[in-house]
Length: 339
Image (cartoon, rainbow, N blue to C red; front, side, top):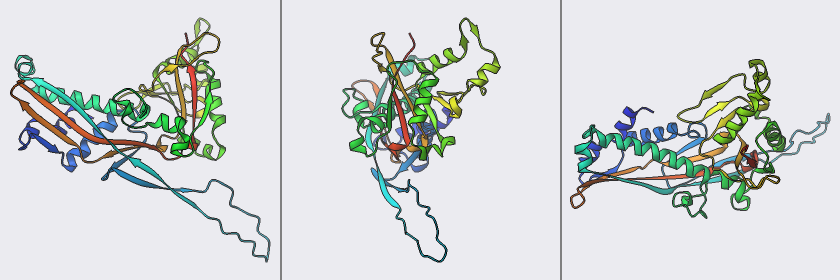
């Protein structure tokens, strides 16, 4: 989204005219803000986004997942009515806030003058979008981080608490080995075959450092760089193209697009032979299986504090995540960064 769009969403002069210095954005402003947030993030434009009017919604699921066809016998009623399983996914939002302030001196002394206030508002909103995506991916209510403890993100819902969130993802251990074709092969073979019928919708989600290792691996053979023909054989025929504001798509190992997600967290991969080294995960998942909910009501306050000679901003929104079907995903853990 452009800066012009965000300026229409959070226009400081408009907020300042409210009797209390702020309040609810109207429906159009709220929708623009949510559009901006989703488009500014790597996964926002790929996962299933839900605009909510309540703090909690129930999303219906229909499940079959087994053979229903039976042999028919001429002249004999061998029919057996099958039941369809209905269930629900609960998507609950948590209130988040963003605060910042500008002193009168900063507005007076800066070359942008009063325009600085709108500029900072745009920067802060972009940062809020990135921070919310970080929580959506890595959130963990047991974390000591003041942001990540807001709610459980997709990673924890997939692999950390199958008993809490229902069927969890298939988890494979890469044993501290670097990212390679074997890693992708392990993920694909771990996926239940009934979900492989939607192979065209699957994506490998990988962090930036592992992506760099992969590119280094496939683009170099000994001291000589491979030819374009060899790159095509390795699934990089399409080259590198960006997807949205950040991240990118880097070929398609075994026909499944490889997508960079910069906000995947790294951790000690505990490599067996070389000691601990940082690493991350590889997710094999249909991004539409990941739910990201935002409540439409967004509140923005702007207040001048005379004793501080500063303008304070406060933005409130409600956000939550869920996984529609945890079993339709594979997470390969302990994928080490190449030394």
